[in-house]
Length: 277
Image 1: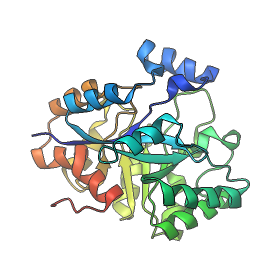
Image 2 (image 1 turned 90 degrees about the vertical axis):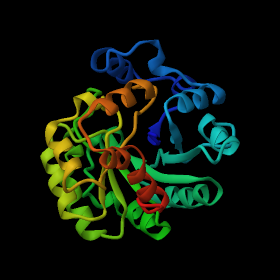
Image 3 (image 1 turned 120 degrees about the vertical axis):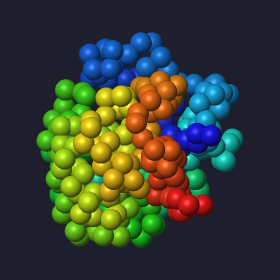
Image 4 (image 1 turned 180 degrees about the vertical axis):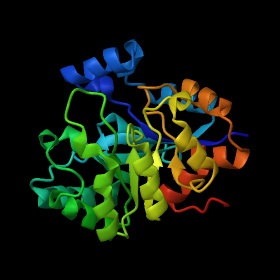
């Protein structure tokens, strides 16, 4: 029986005003319909998860979120089904952000922190820049995984800072940091794979990628040396769970490799449960 952890789920798109570039992503990049910016109710999301074998979902939220925010409410209501992905940091003034992270992690079920280099600071700071070092250090102290956007982003914003090569120095200097590339690595898949071969602490999540669009070089890596390195996510509602999991089932993978991708690798990396458990 297929078991799934959806590593990246958005539940508050309709609760916030979307910038013009997000509207362009919906219409020009994903050809998304009205459901693209939906904010589901708890029962609706659980129903979709149950229908598709998703045992747990990690919900994106911000470090400023309170119990009134949708993701936090869902995690409090169903802690066995939801964890949180924590973002929204001002790394140019790091001390306030670091205190907020520590406080939030103490009070909520946080699976990982998340940062998008193209989406803050005018896209001027690649992950190798020292502006990120306080965040890396705090994540190491808390043994908290960090997910970093890689690949050229869909919005019309600078993308060079999301080249995975910028993580090379990070992995050298912070071998204790559990680090995951998210949203694929297009067009730098080969660089991302080479880095994962090189560094034991590095993973890649296929969030926001239709499984049928994943490149053959990544699928080959999943079948061979990278069986424990690739994690599944939809970026719901950007892509639906139903669509992604139907496409994942159609890919030529062994049952063991597919289970690692859809469930066991995330369970081990984010929650510390061995793949064989």
